Length: 153
Ligand SMILES: Cc1cc2nc3c(=O)[nH]c(=O)nc-3n(C[C@H](O)[C@H](O)[C@H](O)COP(=O)(O)O)c2cc1C
Image (cartoon, rainbow, N blue to C red; front, side):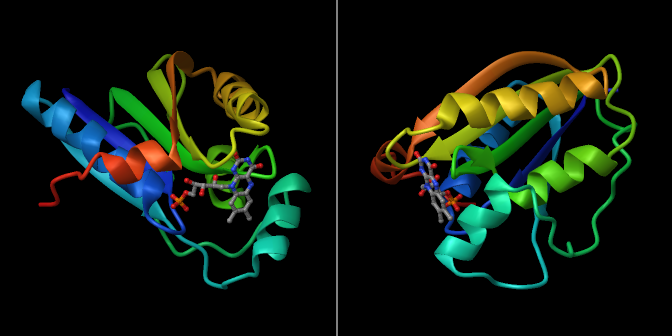
């Protein structure tokens, strides 16, 4: 098994660009990669999203697999919302299965940087609760994402 799963939520595309970069890097190393973009059925306002993130209010998610047994490495990505992960990723981490004993990386994108450590810590705890091993944490400021001019495929 040499397959990585990149599971992420991205509302405005920044986190998705980082996800694509990670995919390119892994593919260059010869790994098979699957991307799972999480999305919610309803749209919310900025304030609504911030409050939902802060108070861990779940939204109804579009259907994806929660079974991670086919992957040997996992990457979990989200924007920082109100010093928290976006609810879709928190929701996913609560439900997923097959993370035990596997290497997991966290990546977040953020604006001001306020609360990014908190968001990462929340994710780390959730992954460790599922007995995943957090091996790296990547935080990219939105400005840096935009500047990178990533190549889309
Ligand atoms: C509802 C909401 C709350 C946010 N809260 C924070 C925050 O607490 N700290 C921060 O640095 N950036 C915050 N941001 C900025 C986002 O983290 C940043 O724009 C991120 O790159 C967006 O990722 P995306 O394009 O993948 O959705 C917030 C953005 C939104 C929409």
